[in-house]
Image 1 (spheres, one colour):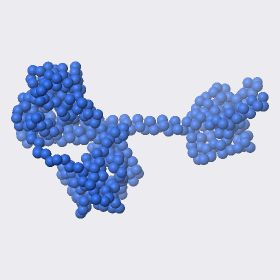
Image 2 (image 1 turned 45 degrees about the vertical axis):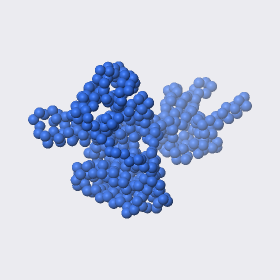
Image 3 (image 1 turned 180 degrees about the vertical axis):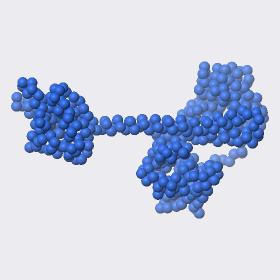
Image 4 (image 1 turned 120 degrees about the horizontal axis):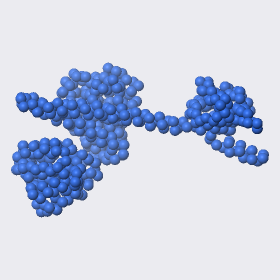
Length: 499
C-alpha cells in the first residue's frame, strides 16, 4: 500500500495539472508540486487558509464560491477560473471540482484538477479579433466599392440623356474612366496583399537610379494633387543615387506614400517629397500638413487593413492597404520605413531608407531599341467572345469606332462556330465562359485557322504569373487583364497587322 501511495504521489507531482484538496472551511489539505509552485508555497504550507493562497484577492471570491457550490450540492462542476501566480502572471484554468467524501459518504471538502488553458484562450481571442477585423474590412470594402460604383452609375445615366451637351458627356466619360481606374487600383492592392500573405511576390531587381523612379511616381500622382489644389514640393539629390531593386515596385512604394499624403491632407494643403543620401542609404521623406496621426496609433499605422481612427477614416477613401504594402515591399528590398507625427491636426512624416549600391554601379542590361509600335489603322476582322454581354458590346463598339469589322460570341462553343464562318484576324477570348472555356475554345480555333496568321488574345480577371504562363502554353499570343487597357489592346492589333 505504501508503494502504491508513493506511486500516486510521484504521478501527481510530475504532471503539469494542478491537483488539490480543501476541507469544508477552505484549508488546503493537499496540493501537488505544480499547485505549490504556482502559489509560491511548499509542503509546510499545507493547512493554510484558502484566502492566504491568493495573490489577487479579487480572484478569491468567485473561486471560493465555486468550492462552496460543490460542497452544498454534492455535484461536480467544470468552470473557467483566473488565478494570478506568485510570478504575477494571470492564467486561465479549466477546473473540474468534485465533492470530497469520507468513508461514510459525508462531504468533508472539495477535490479539484485544474488545467492551464491560457494559450488556448489567447488563441480564441486572436481568432475573435481576426474575425472582427474581417467583418470590419468586408463592410469597409463594400463601402469603398459603392463609392466609385455610385459615380459610375450616375455617369452612365448622364450618358443616357439625349439632350446632354458635349461638355457634360465628356465630363461623364472622364468620371467613368477615373472611377474605374480607382477600382482597378483597389483590386490590384488586394491582389498584392494576397501575394504577400502567400509569399509569392517576386521582385525583379536590378541596379537602378532612384531619381527617375521618383519622378515617374510623382507624375502619376500629380492629377490627384491638382484635383485637390495641393502643393507638392519635390527635392531630388544633386547626384545620381543607385539602389538594387525592382523599379516598378519602388515606384509603387513612392506612389503609395504620395497618395496617402494627399488623401489625408485637406484641399489646398502642402506635401514635401525629399530624396537624400544619408549613411550609405537612400532616404525618402514624405511630409504633409494633413490630419496627423495620434501617438497611440503610430505603432499600428502599417498594419494590414489598419485604419487610423474610424471617424477620420470614414471621411477618406481607402481600404487601409497602401501603407501595409509599402512596409512589406520596403522590407523585401532590405529597407525600413517609419512614421512620425506630433498628433492630430499637425501633419505626418514618413521616412523610408533603402541601402545604396556601393562602388561603381553596373547599368542594367538594355534592350535593343525598337521602332515605336504602330496603332492599327487598317480594318481588321475581330471576334470577341465574352459571356458578359455588356462588356462584349462595349468592346465591340470601341473597335467599330476604330473602323474594324467585329463579331461577338456569348460562350466558347459559339466562338468556335463564329470563327469558322467569320475567319477573324484577331480573337479576344474571355477565359471563364460557359459550354466551352477560353482555353479549349482557343485550341479549337487555332486548329481551324491553322496557317491563317491568327492572333489569339486571352482576356481574364486572373493576373497571376501562373495564369499568364498557362495562357502561353494554351497557344494565346497575349494575356490581358480585365478591365483591359485599350492602349495595350490597340498595340496588340498593330502587332498583328505587321505579322
